[in-house]
Image 1 (cartoon, rainbow, N blue to C red):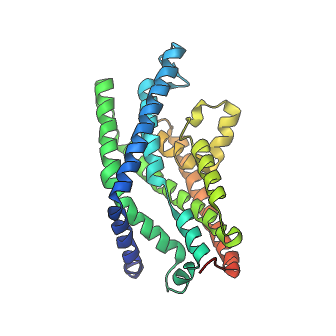
Image 2: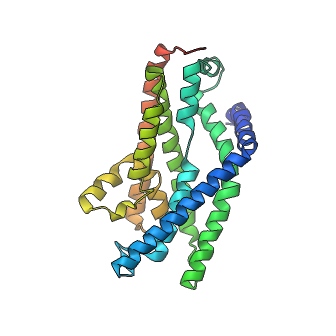
Amino acid sequence: MRRLCNTYKSFLKAGIQSGMAYRVNFICFFIGESLYCIVMYFIWKAVFMSSGNGNFMGFNMVDITLYVFLSNLVGFLTSTDSTSSLALEIKDGSIIMRMIKPVNLNLSLLAFELGDKVMVITCTFIPVMIGVEIYRYITLGYIAFNIINFLLFIISVIFSYLIAFYLNLLFGYLAFFLMNIWGFNMLKGSLIKFFSGAIIPIAFFPEKIRVVFEQLPFASLVYTPTMVYMGKYSNNELLFVFAKQIVWLIVFILICRMVWYLAQKRLSSQGG
């Protein structure tokens, strides 16, 4: 285990340095996401006011506000650039430098991205979580924070990130066959945004559609962790959603290994 950590420690440090090197880009992205949350808040506020009911599909205004900010935060935490970075390396041929090194390609990319997440956690996750709980305290008049839900939320986010990483890695491998996957990457981002519940909570969809959406891997990326933190699942439902996340993670790992085996035989480069 120590040998494994020492092997990928340099990739982790490189990720941390990369995250700190592009601070302006990070700050601009954070401001943009904050504005998006504010816009979504006022949209949902208008929906609740027009409904004339304090509750809408089992959510009140406090719930939907928490969902908006928390789902966006989860999406931020679980976002991964493995598709673009891997596709670029495949396109210019620099992927061969990773392949000749005595390291696992997937783990080296994962270690680099985990290093980059250090800045996200310290500069985004902690302040947003504190702000969310302050809002709930002011609105509800009591401390609504639940340590058990928070710990379960952390576990769920870890599974979500790993699922997102291997899902994006799978799309990145398409570059071995298509060379340019910009269109596929845009399509993937749109599908994830919609089916993960990042825009509209899956609970708001008609029952037949909701049941289907909840079984897809996309729900495990944003919707599941957010609902875990909000305490919307019973004990049995918690076991089921965690099992679902584990199953999808294993499925994507196995598919990635299979595609990687096939993809290595098609390695070529453009302009390299």
